[in-house]
Image (cartoon, rainbow, N blue to C red; front, side):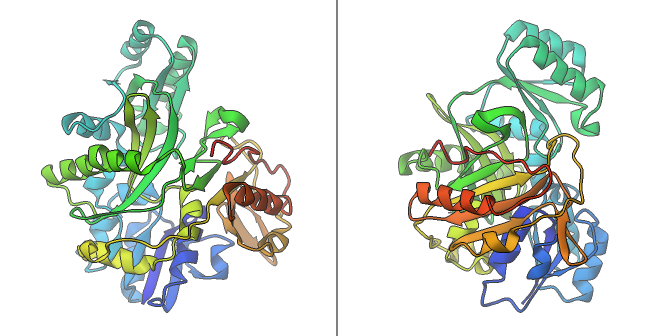
Length: 421
């Protein structure tokens, strides 16, 4: 088979790395890819959201299956265009992708089909939003409706902070059209978990549980990011809790979409808060999580391509269970100084080969590119340093040992990833 992976981050590197292990695969392309992906796939200079160029390439190269990484590509309807062109693609259609592309659509679907979530109100003007904040008090959560690369959520601890978030999104347009409408919701407390499943709208196959670390600094301080690290499994998600999440959240969401006439084929990712009242949904994403994917896929023993093909063809019922490595896995993100704000690029990265020599360590590239014979930084999140260990402590130790081998100017990483485990 000839496979095309769309995207350029750590998630896509992990996908390419896992896909390359499939006995079904002869050739892998990645558009646009990165410095690490280039070592195992042919990188194509096409942007992830240039759906017409990607279709043209897939037809020309006789691609058997396309796997979409980033949400932006799915939100503009890349899956619809590929399917119309007779091409197989793993990822939900544009209507289904609204689960992530519009938080308002997602929250309204949850309310309609009784998916447990935080209480919320929707606003289309900043004056009403600020007045509501004064009425309900804090803490509260302010969310931009549209896509904001994981940064469109502010957990406000003061009324002033919440009002600033409203002004930033609705008046200053820091997220462009994404902040024209916002949601203000109650702040849930508890431990978070990431639940990813693969579904063809009829059957559901769960991936291993994981937990993400969103805040940029240790001890969950600072602004939200796309994710500073993850680990799998998440011990806080017991078999009983996982069963409840599937029944009350995953199945209800998928059934709700089906009742709305929306066919969902791909990964459904539920961000869950484990509250005293039970699991509640923070958000839905319509693709593999990042950096959760880097912590989950190293544990997967089953052939990922077989599962993806079954999903695309509506035959997921043939995949009853997935086989997993029992060892835990930890991923630590190495980011550029200043992330999630402004950051510089083109800083030379050293120590990658030394880190990769450590047993059961994989360094996934995110924001990197190859310049001559050097690998340099090319994004906010630069690397996802990942390790398996016999215990979670061993996995943590190996991961940070590998991180210690790597260096680039301004490198920042959290030192408490997986400490809640």
